[in-house]
Image (cartoon, rainbow, N blue to C red; front, side, top):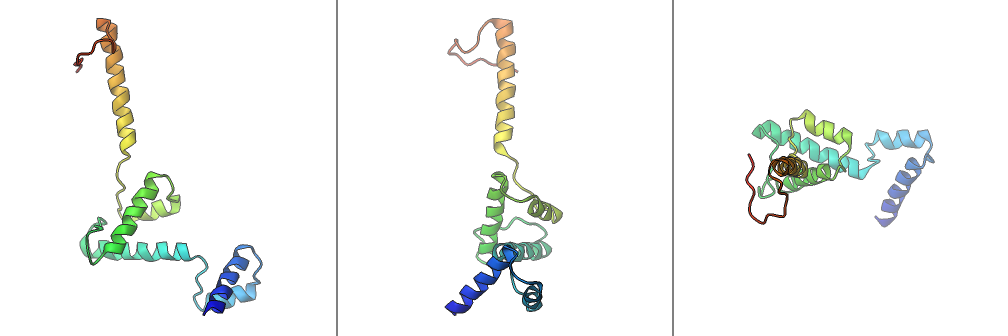
Amino acid sequence: RIQSTKWVSRQRLLYNKGGLNSDRIQELNSIGFIWDCLDHAWNENFDQLCAFKAKHGHCNVSTHDEHNKSLGQWVSQQKVLHKKNALSSDRRQRMDSIGFVFPKEKNVDKRMSWEKRFDELCAFKAQNGLAGKDCYTIRVA
């Protein structure tokens, strides 16, 4: 088993470096050889999500759902990757294509809210001559 694991890893390495001849690639492809395990796992989970949506009508898989716990964890991980801008555009498009809704970026909303409040403070200061030196709550629109 260890020898075959090493051999399989070696075939993947050679393939990725362009050092595996086309006949061997064709032979491995003919038996459904998986060249990229991480990509394969992502596709398997995506297929499970598609099946979940077909059954339930949505993509909101809970991590607390005992029947779909690992799928729920995978969905959560996709949200984290998206938030960190670490989800490839191809994967993002595939998620979008099935109606998956990523959470809104909260920091963008907070930043916009902060900027709006800052603008209000500037307008208040221009009108009343105060800006932060008054310790009382300043109420603006």
